[in-house]
Image (cartoon, rainbow, N blue to C red):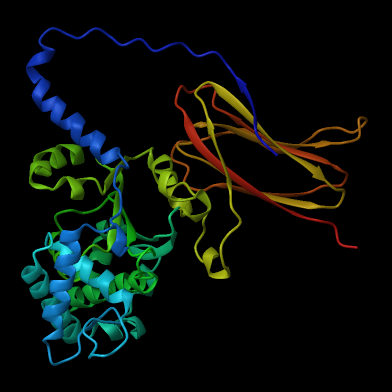
Length: 422
């Protein structure tokens, strides 16, 4: 089944002439535009951990770091990977992946990477990081809301979502961050979420060796969360080097690009290339570039509901785009009498009309209105989810009318047909 489109004419856009004096602000505007374009880009290429793909200088640094670690009398293990097994123990290619992460975090300065690694091992022992996964820290109500692992991207990276907007509620804020002990417990819980992400990695050359971070900035109380944010950032930078393949910021306020333009000169090109930004109303389109719609949570314009992934990989959705001024019909054919069809549909940014009808195969039958055509608001945060049992053979037709908008929109749908029982 494939969508059919009925386009309506759209006027061509004409660029307005430059106002007098526009050139005076060129340097500032150029820097802001450059920052915004960079944040929206997806130019980052993940580093390889395959020895044959590494330059000779990186291999020499790796060998030097191995040699330094071999002089330590006590065993060192990070994320369950032994880093200095006694000879003639078998070589573990996972160790090279871990060592390369520390080397890259210190630009292949071997002694700096060695010092960082030892500090990380000491912190993990003191923090009891290997045991944190088994602890109940009392934040069940934050699971799936504030920080949680959910699905994977198109390249297999586990995805971690972060959203701190719930803390705009003062009672919630005080309950979680009200004193030093509560803050420490929250930080331990946040490390627990990160350890879940690391546990999902392969940590092998050619494998999946980093996660994706999606951070929702909507309603985030910046001033109140400054202390917690700084401690989380410091913990992760010091003890989880090169664990994030890409950072996607969504529901970003307008001033974020201004701030980024100010700090951009102090960041390396490699660091900046990991960042992707999505303003409110453009979240689904951005996330769909990296994550399939059936794995994106419903609150971000996807089809994935809480707990759905516990039963295994979901049924893949079909993706399509709707041009501005276009009306699209999705036809689901071959439905038998007595069969039940269930469908999910989502459109990024909605702000269009949607309806559904059932068309019987018999020529003397009438078309049935299943869902009356209605306007779906731009702020809609739930996909369409409906079911219909057919009394006679026919087809389901879903209509998506974007003729009132000039904006191109991404969309996805999937359906299930349960045949009639004998």
